[in-house]
Amino acid sequence: MSLLSLCLALGNTSSASAQDTSVESATWRFEFDNDVFFNKDNKISSGWSLQKQSAVARSWNALEDVPDFVRRLGKTIPTLTEEGLVYRAGIAIGQVIQTPDDLSRSDLIEDDVPYAGALTLQATWYAFNDDEFRGFEITTGVVGPPSLAEQTQKTVHKLIGSPDPKGWDNQISTEPVINFNYMRKQKTWRGGNPAGLSFDTAINGNVGLGNLFTQASVALEMRFGQNIPRGFVYVPDPIGLSMHYKATLKPANPQAASFYGTLVLRGSAFAHNIFLDGNTFRDSHSVDKEPLVGMAIAGLHYECESWGIHFNVMASSDDVDSSKYPAAEGRERLGAIDIEWRF
Image (cartoon, rainbow, N blue to C red; front, side, top):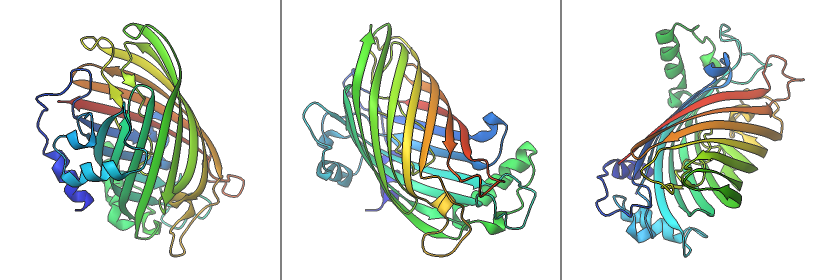
């Protein structure tokens, strides 16, 4: 069965009638990433994804409203089945857009990043509790003209009165992409009153392999605030770079709202990044990337019983060798808004 079948099956979900009140119900999330928050329109310029996470279950067999093959595959993925964990599966469709700084030029800008876009479908399996997280994700999709990045950006720019990007004829060529991601998290420190003010920290390790991104990263994740949900923070990322997940359990006081802040400090080592390295199987415009990239992500989060909203800003160190490509802004800066509905 295809990932598209999984997407359709997860979309036809009804409310769970017998869910444990201590765990999360099924969740829809819409994520919008854009650099307009920093008054810029280059590098990773925009992205969006629509995500569906199943209700939390006590075993893979107990997952509700998903195809049987999703349950079977969850049980076969190494390390994702262990006593004391709960289980979720997710599906997401998304798009990401990259442009150089000067959108007025129609010629190939050799000293800046390529025009590039990706349209992807992601399937995720993960197991977690309030102490640890283990997850696996498959990303499939396409880069190049079939990603519809050109049409999306031009339509949005026309609607909001921004300059028309002229250089999409120079975008990287059509190429199917596939990526595999594996992630582990472990709580390391916590304190305070779980139903009141509290904090926790976790270590996050992530490995990605594929022709979209091949990378390894490690991060320190910190949460602090009022009535924080149990589990782990979700870190927004351009699709394929990390995983989509909703690894939370209801807070100590489920009748009260949660309001908290997060700070994530991450270091990544890149062997391949299709947005900077260009096409994998043919010559295309590319730039020399920096193999080691640091990033900080700060967020504010509000969650109640049926919905939540999350705002994050992220800034990286140089991911392009700007001494060779003076037109390229080396640092990546993005804002992200996530809106969630639970039912």
